[in-house]
Length: 146
Image (cartoon, rainbow, N blue to C red; front, top):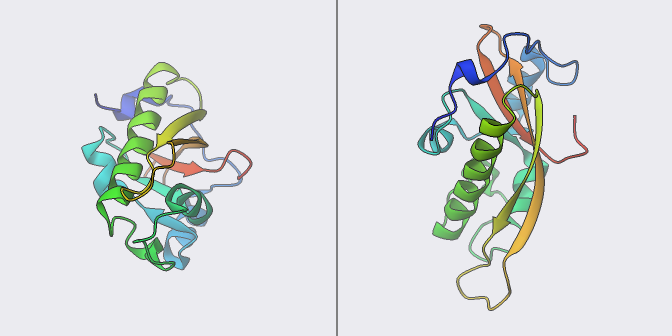
């Protein structure tokens, strides 16, 4: 499955909350984490970033992920599996709702390998905007974030 640029409406003008310059600044100061390399493997053909808060929620409860794992979110196999699940769910949902600029989706998060806890579900939002080069960029946020 691939999410191509043409899957995004041409009228995807930047939202006021995620203007291209604002997005770049958020990436620089760590409020957004670039997941483009991993997202490419999940089928995205546009740059993908995730908010720090959404990443913390998705990696919560993992004993082997340090609190400062924001700069390297795939420090464990379980963390990588969780991110893969999130990106796959986002890609699958955007394929069905490619006309929407904001797509709400859910992803199943497996527990830590050493835990007998059941899998949990996280609800997120994928916002697609035009980037600084007028090519789409994707940002994964908590549902109430802008």
